[in-house]
Image 1 (cartoon, helix red, strand yellow):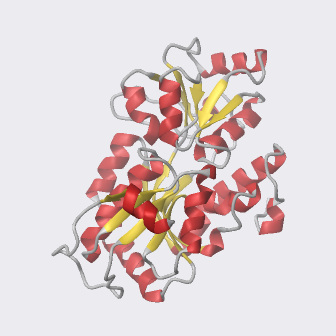
Image 2: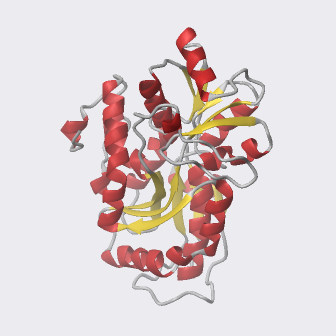
Image 3: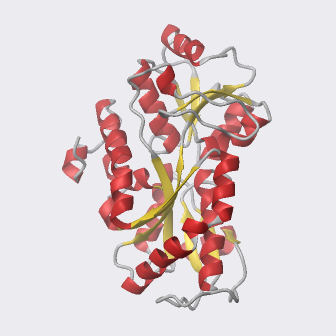
Amino acid sequence: MLRSLMLTAAAIVGLTGAASAQSYPWKPTKPITIIVPWGAGGSTDQVVRLIGKEVESAIGQSVVIVNQPGASGSIGTKAVLDAPKDGYTIASGAAKDAGTYAVTGLLNTKLDDWHLFLAVINSSVIGVNANSPYKTLDDLIKAMKDKPGTVTVATAGINSSGGAALGAFSTGAGVEAKHVTYDGGNPAVIATAGGETSVTTQLAVEQAEMIRAGRIRALAVVGTKPLNLEGVPEISPVTKFIPTFPATDNYFGIFLPKGVPDEVVKTFEAIWTDKLAKSEALKKYATSRGAIVAVVHGDAAKAAVMPAVKETAWGLWDRKQAKVDPASVGIPR
């Protein structure tokens, strides 16, 4: 199954045998596959393709990106868990997803099953179709309160970043929306830009071009700080409208399953320190797309993502959207 997906859906990011390859403990003898558990063009796809190029230039081996969407990212993530633990098949996405799949019942995994290699922090934006009557966040909140469950909001699923943002917004603002899910952030954003749905709560990196093009109106960033996106006015934080809103940082990167050889882990640790932390391409991407560079791995990465894991897991539980008690899978409130 994985082999056929690689043959039909893979995108070769670069060439094998780059002359600039340094001497790392692990010397892969064949292409490395990174599975993006979402559709092409979304937040994970964007940053992973950039990471893939950096890894290629470091180790002199091809990196193949495979889009394998479905079930809020759990299908592609499971494919990595089921693959040989040899370093040649790697997962990717938002680290909070890996930490909350067990709570949603989508996949029996937790953060401790992975070596986390993170690259950026992404923030969700509450964006509306440019032709909608919602000019401000207060307008949207009023509409959702006046007609509960009727304003359509597009996301990549309950366990996605957009889904988590919608859940937090619904709780924080005391509103109820009509949740419409898609197989990735990019399709969800396109649905809102095209008028199929009224709102999306997907990430800024996914909405950036539609916001710049005037097809989506950004009402607020789901966070505590304003978001500066090239070419558009500063986007106010949701806490400006809802001071008690529970905002956490959403880290994205790649994940090696526990059980891979130690030399593989050490090689990626060196790449993260020597290459990715100094990447001008990553800095340029973050500036243009509204992301924040956050290159971190190991125990520091786990500590960084736990607040988002806790907030998401217990938010799902409190909204009765979870199938498993977070405490039973090691997530304290």
